[in-house]
Image (cartoon, rainbow, N blue to C red; front, side, top):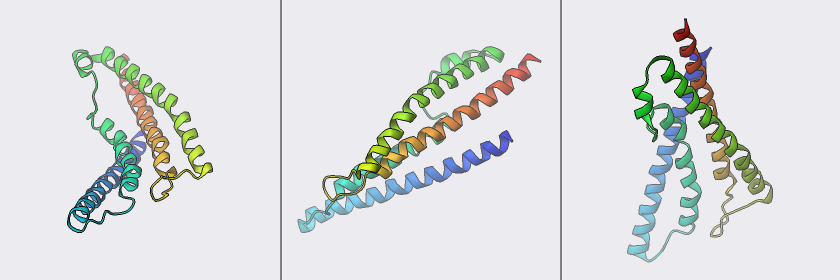
Length: 165
């Protein structure tokens, strides 16, 4: 069951990284086109700033869980790597519990922020793009990170159990 859960998470993470990379590439094309259009034809692309501000959230939070699973984030590994056996896995469990606590603190507020934007019809100033999709990305990323945390806690507990025997 744990292996199936882990494979499902990896598929979601890989899909989100591909989406984030596509967003970055398309945003790069948009900004390049806007700069060239402004310089060569003195005609800026309308709403370019709004599009960039809405999509920045997408590529910013879609990669968090993938980065965490690959240990690409900033973390105090010196202490974790210095420990072995039960102490190491106990510290891993404490770190993961702390991360899950922080995610649990962020999740309700980000969901309320999304719901407020969704119900009020919040939009950008320039061309009136709805901003609720970008605000929905934060609770989705927090849920994915919570899923990753629970998965890590299960693994840490399983290692702890095998080390105790």
